[in-house]
Image (cartoon, rainbow, N blue to C red; front, side, top):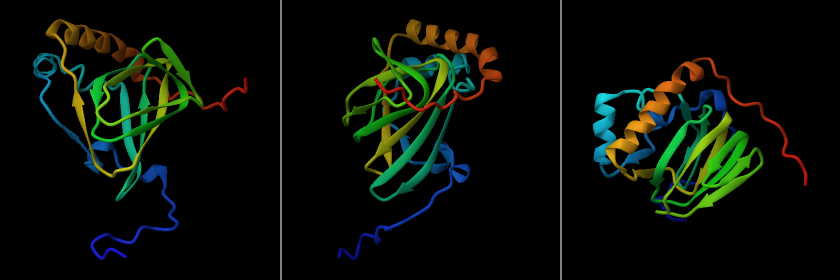
Length: 176
């Protein structure tokens, strides 16, 4: 056995109610500087403080992490990459991924450094992210200021709706 690596647990229980937020867990580092995004955020806090997302980390240990995301209806996750492979599973609601709609029971895999983004569907989305690392980065792909301004406007317009929005109802996937 490698003495520098802690012994991996053979069995553990974790409680979702005790999960730290993504910020509290400190496991995702922003890399790069999407200058246009930051410029718009400096003038309009609606993107940074939208109230349209909640992210926590129910489980994390060396070599593994589980992140739980709740995006409210229409929340836009910008085009970005991570430095690790990611496996996503839609628990409830739906997401719009390009021209495809993924619903509860669907998922997708994204390899390291592959750009992707998606939006939550009309009822919002609850998504699980599985990674084979406990820490990872995020690199948001910048876009023109006018495009970020449209994103900020759509988030500002959604805030009254998001204020009272509840998570989507979990349903078992329909068999084809």
